[in-house]
Amino acid sequence: MNIKSLLLGSAAALLAVSGARAADAVVVAEPEPMEYVRICDVYGAGFYYIPGTETCLKVGGLVRYEIGWAETTGDDGWIKTTKARVNLDARSETEYGTFRRFIELEYANDGGSTLRDIDGDPVGYEGDSSTSTVRYAFFELGGLMVGRNDTLFDGDLGGEFDAGGGDFINQIRYTFDAGNGIAVSLGLEEEDNNFDYIPLITGKVSVSQGWGSVDLFAGYDDRFSEFALKGIARVKATDALTVELLAAYESGATWFGLADFYEGYEWSVGGYLKYQVNEKLSVGFGGQYFADSHFGDFPSNTTIDVGNDDWTVGAVIDYTIVENLNAKLALNYDDGDSFVDGSFNGFLRLDASF
Image (cartoon, rainbow, N blue to C red; front, side, top):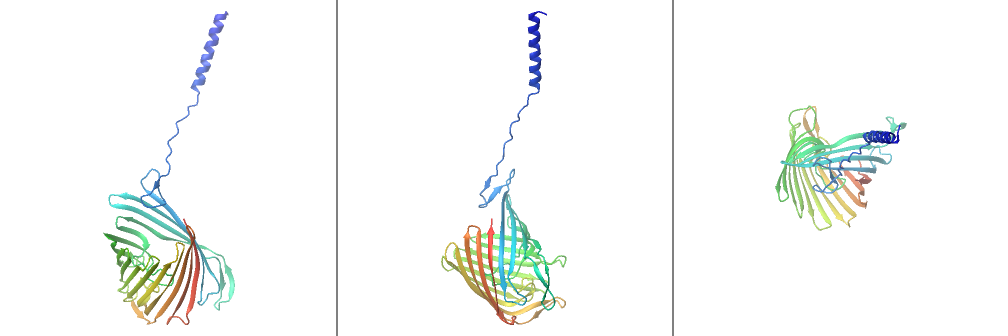
């Protein structure tokens, strides 16, 4: 073998090895573009676009701790409750207007309880347990609202002593916005599952202006063929002082009862004063009078008139400790024909929201 053959053979070997290594080379893929969460300021603070969509989402919630007491039969100590609420608010725009979907779930725990016999003596202890409920689950499209929400008849004074009737209920509602702070709503609500084919009928007219607002409510319940009416006015007497007035009438027992479902009063009037001391502190005081009590008798399908007259007064102190942490102290007094003696009740509530 001569030197020329040796050099040619070595070059061929090097080319072969280089080609093999080139074939095995790792190819680095181009990174995919990242899509960051975009802020959605169309509906206010806290909304973000869901990636890949034009739907805006806001996640919120509340942690509540409350210590209460009441001078009533069976009250032997503090009444403590912890609640957790989580809500989702999704919104987008369509050719029919804003399309909104809203859900709020609540989890509550009242702690353990002492078991008592018929005489009220302690006989044991039961560990605590939690409860869960769907507070809200509805969608809105334009003026239409469908799902579980507060009854359209919902409305009361700003205190913690008063009663206005109504609760959460499954419903279909339409609101016509007439402009200039005027809105008219009509609702069909179902208070009982698989009971009949006639819903509760509710209506509301709202007027909101710079001086305050007036809301007029009406509700018809076919169970006893009775109706309820209510009016609430809120007037800004000064920049710091707000005056609230309530008047209500019930023809008989309805689901909208001022005392409870199918328990109420023929008429009621009330008022509440709220004074904003500063940006953190506000105080309020008011009262409500209830006349001619009644309840629904289901076997006879009639309203039974009892005729009791009752009244209640209360005071509230609201204080913002820091942003999203609020404290409320409430003290109420109840008396009248339905009570053997007048009694006090109240609570201290801490709400931490996000």
